[in-house]
Image (cartoon, rainbow, N blue to C red):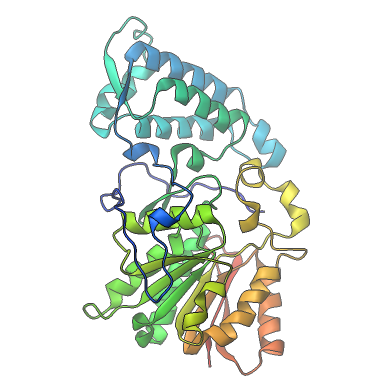
Length: 376
């Protein structure tokens, strides 16, 4: 079952995460400029300016209310759909406070919120959002089961801090393995792939595209590194991915194109060095049973893979047979062992003689999760 999971999540500012500037870029012909995108990405809480304030007593009152609301959950959500318990919600509340208050004031303010002597303290605390808004967002987190990542507007993934918002799939720790496959398998087996065009299909937040671009750049000889084209059908995902690319200063390496799967890539057909994707793979009749944070809030477009969950995976396999150049690499995430074996059988029977070194790779939890290979 797909669920939100916190693994190695740490709060704090990533030094390479910066405010984007308008920039139009294009690898070949088609390009997307921020001015051409209808959706304006939201700014993550922790990088908003501290333009608001509240007294320490007001902040303490809010913190007590929020903590009590989290504690009232107990294990209800765990029993319902394997959701968060009170312990995790209180931990998230502490992370929310860390994002709300400037870093240099953490040691002074955060310990005092647990004190009972703050009711009449007039000390003013600078905040990145008004306290009234914090009442609303914490209700959304607990009562509506809105994912914490959407509440604070970002997710920590590998060494990145990525903006996310409703309409964009939250990247999972499992998907990080795709980047390891690029670095440890593809570039190790075929070092020349570092100079080619790569594609991240269904990019969402741009996580795979950005991490792949950084790997290609780190393995390149000088400036002779590859480029990444990221595609997504969702205008929200295109806007958010574009913003994340700009925040990491990769707009000359990563291009974001709007469109479905291979549709925006006709100009590079047969030329791709690599194709990567974490596509929708949840069977349609499993969607209703997902954790509420996932099923109610994350985009159905990024979850529903059809009756068996393999509709988009099969489309990707069919596409890479013609989109990859000889020797090109692919890696796709799946729902688990059954889908992995089904895809390998499909490749061996329906695409015989088109690929080599087809392998199933397990994720960090030992679940068979990825199918990868090279085009002949």
